[in-house]
Amino acid sequence: MTPKLVYFLLALGGLLTVAVLGVIGAFALASGGTSAALAPAAGLCAGIALFPALAFSWLYWQAQRRDRGLAQVGALLESYGEVSAATMAERLGRPEDEAEELMALSIREGYARGRIDPKTRTFRKSEGP
Image 1 (spheres, helix red, strand yellow):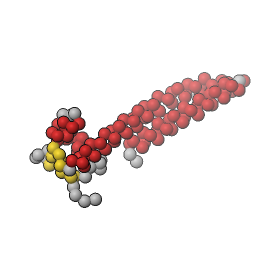
Image 2: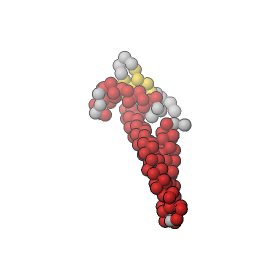
Image 3: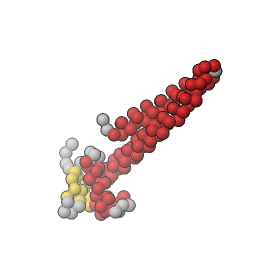
Image 4: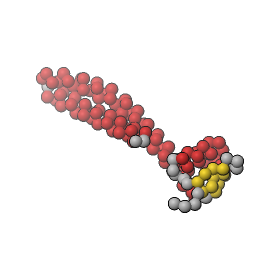
């Protein structure tokens, strides 16, 4: 299970918990009587549960952005076939070392098939499936 999927599931579970506690609090308040005492507790728990849900939502969003960026770098590498880190740095608007790291991550994550020659810092696309 990837971290991105774990973040998604935890965020979804947290937001559902907030929704359920909010509904319980609203019904408790509307019914009045002794069950109305549950409303503040449910509201407090919903508020507390909201913070981790938002944190995991943010982590999921960051992982999604990372994957989209690596997919774009991989698509560029695949389209060029052979490209130097300097050219990719210029194309991405990043320093050359950072561009080489992004190229390597893109290959490692499976968005591009090939290898980087450490001497020339050039990506060469692998032939085949």
